[in-house]
Image (cartoon, rainbow, N blue to C red; front, side, top):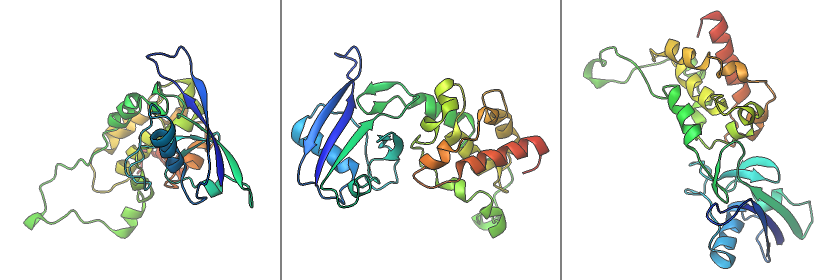
Length: 241
């Protein structure tokens, strides 16, 4: 299969504005990923192309980008899924995720995103004495099920950078941070739910969400992000978790 790849490029050291780089690749395996063809461009055609990637198996979340207008992980997006059935060629457009400053080509500044993540106290808080004999803090299956979905987040920023509210104001804590807060707010063993609810309940917290489901559609882990945000809103209004 032939791939016509269009990549949004920008090098702040020499470019005054972004530009499009066009690359034609032949004999591409349809089961290759977008990350594979980006590697071909970087390794065989233009070594200056900059992108983030690590595990290449959908676990690290580092290669989130806009592919044909939608947020996705390059390593999980197969060429065959972007082509029409039976087609021998496909056009693919790749851009950096939106809402975060572009450092170079497909690499964005993740610090604002990570600052929101840190703000929700994304760690376990329990000041009770450790159970005897060092045993773990037990939890029922029903209590675990309340937050099981939000443990899947890999911090790829696909949800937050697909959110119009975040595009409008980067002070919005964003879907990913709320997902992380949800994971601990609804953990029956944790003791800092009230502090986290205070963070996500301020003017730049959950109430900025407009429930348009972009975040849920963008999540490569298929987390029900909008549902998690709604559950945090309910906890804030009822005082119950």
